[in-house]
Length: 171
View 1 (cartoon, helix red, strand yellow):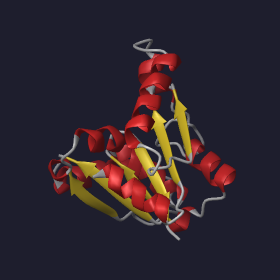
View 2 (spheres, rainbow, N blue to C red; view 1 turned 180 degrees about the vertical axis):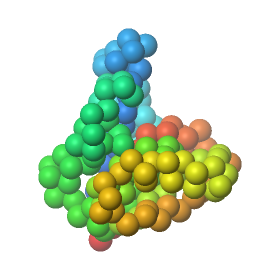
View 3 (cartoon, rainbow, N blue to C red; view 1 turned 90 degrees about the vertical axis):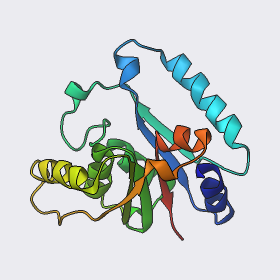
């Protein structure tokens, strides 16, 4: 599951970064403190072997997305901050997410490998990709996205991690 993946990346000294939209905070459904408590519990459940190097989060609402420099995905602001702060080579990185906006952010940021974990059919994902590609800057080649069905993700902990977005730099 996700825990063993993160542990393996840690053993390889690869950097693990979580970038996450938390619009529930912006909607006043929960607070930054509550989000922080859930995040601390997640890190506790992962243990010391699954080292997370950084977490970038924002509380922007979907209608607050102001272009691809935004911190709200599909904006790449959080990815650019991680790249700068941790000196990550995004071209050698893996970007894992569960939404088409995650894939778009990874694609626009130039991440080398995109993996989407979803229950949607490849056809539905392709339709969504085409709609989003139409909005993207014209000088980007079409993204290549690997699809992993959520049904293949067994543990509850894996779903907690996969529902957030991880990038892992590959040595």
